[in-house]
Image 1 (cartoon, helix red, strand yellow):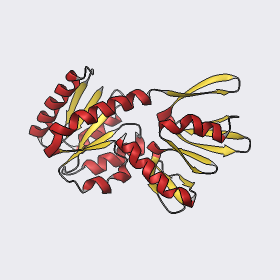
Image 2: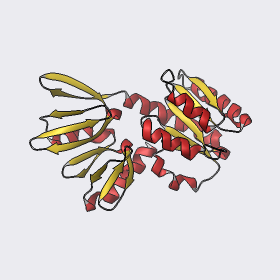
Image 3: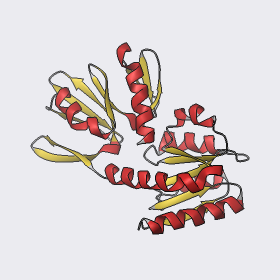
Length: 235
């Protein structure tokens, strides 16, 4: 597991690295930790194609480019990287949902909360490596779940919109919903199934995705979608 820690407090960065090492070794998880001391430094590293991070442990309060700025950047360009906010502000939990964080750690409770977060993260990364498999033009196609943004009914076909391309298949939307419902996908409208990883915000009649695209929402689904987003953040 490639881990980035970003905190302007060098002492806390060192303490966090030590605690992570202890938890990783205890759970027999291979890892590498790269520390960063400001948001700009981390964004530069994220822009380097030679770097690949599986998770970012991100302080909220930093001078200059703060944790919220970094989370917004990750959301807009690298949506599949989980972000775990590390903060002293309990009230930040609710206001930060727009950044789609994987989780939160309170600095005063790191000892009691870190291991649970790491285990949950390890399980998530395992699931993210799994794929949705279907037939397309006589070929068997496998798409990683975390690359599928949403699925749209189109006549007697469905269009699978991914981060890279769009693919049509003859499988029905109901069949597709059944296959994907256990992997963070939710039916938001009679014609759309959406990956909760890519939902940025929920409005009265539509949802906004992390790429700023908008999809219609059935009014009766709004609360269910919000609960699904919360569940995804917890699970």
